[in-house]
Amino acid sequence: MSTISNKVTPLEEYLFDLNGYIILRNVIDAHQLASANAIVDSCPKDLKTGEWWGNVQVQSYSETDGINLQQIYEAGKPFEELIDQPGWIEKVKHFVGGEGTFDWLHGPLFLDENFFSIRGPGQAIGLHSGGETGTKRTQFRYHNGHFQCGQINILMAFNDIGPGDGATMVIPGSHKANFPHPSFEEHKMKHGETKSVEGVEGAIEVYLNAGDAILFVDAISHGSAARVNDGERRICVYRYGPSWGYFRHGYRPSEALLDRLAPEKRKMVHPHEAALLPPQ
Ligand SMILES: O=C(O)CCC(=O)C(=O)O
Ligand SMILES: [Fe+2]
Image (cartoon, rainbow, N blue to C red; front, side, top):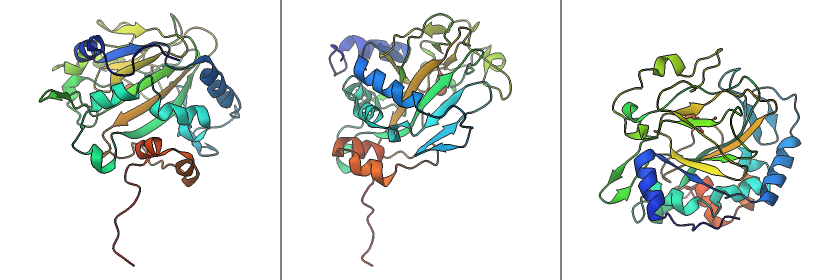
C-alpha cells in the first residue's frame, strides 16, 4: 500500500490549485488490483449496453468510448474498499471541503458515480469540461481559505497505461480557464465518431502504472488519447462531491450493499439514509 501521507501535503495542495490535478502513486496494492481484475474478468463478455450483471449495469456514451460497468462498488469487496481508500480519501475531503458546515449533518462526501471502464484499440473519449463553462456541480472553487470543489474524481489504473494505451489527457490549469480551447469543437466528444484529445495544444497524456490514480477536479478540460496498442485499458472512476449532492445517474445502492458497508463508507454511498417522516 501507499507510503505517502494520507493527508494533503503542501506540495499536493500547491500543484492541485495550480494544475487542477495531482498524481497519486501506488495507492492500490497488488492484491487488491488482482482481486478487482479477477472480478472484472468474470463478467460475461457478451453483455450489451443496458444489460445488467447482478447490480452492475453495462453503459456507454457511444460506440467509440468502450464500456463502463456502472455501480462497480456492487461487484465485491475490492470495489467496496475503494469507497474510502486511505490513499486518497482525506485528500478528497480536503478539496471538496465543507468541514464543519454540512458534514456534521450527513457526512463529509457523497460518491455520486462509480464505474469501471474498459477500452480497446481505436477507442477514446473526446475533450470535455473546462473552467469557462462555470458548471456548478463540477466547479473548482477556493474561497475563504478553503477548497470547495464540486466534484473530485479519482481515476485509477488497473493495468499499466503508457504511450499508445489511450491514456487520460488533461490541459493543466484549464479548471481556471475563461475561454474555451480554440480546438474544442474539433476534439469534443461526438456520437458515432472517435474523437480524442491528441493534437490539442497544451494537453498532456498522464501515464500511470497499475495501482496509481489521478485526482482531478472535473472542471479541468480532459479526455483521452485513442488506444492504438492491442489489449485493453482498464480504469475505474469514483466521483465524489459534497454530501448534499445527488446521484449522477438513476442508479441506487442495493440494500444488500448498504447492509454490508461500515458506517463511514455507508455515509458516502447514501448520506441521507434515515428519512425524516411524520409518524404514520
Ligand atoms: O477515459 C478517460 O481517460 C477520461 C475519463 C473521464 O472523462 C472522467 O473520468 O471524467
Ligand atoms: Fe470526464
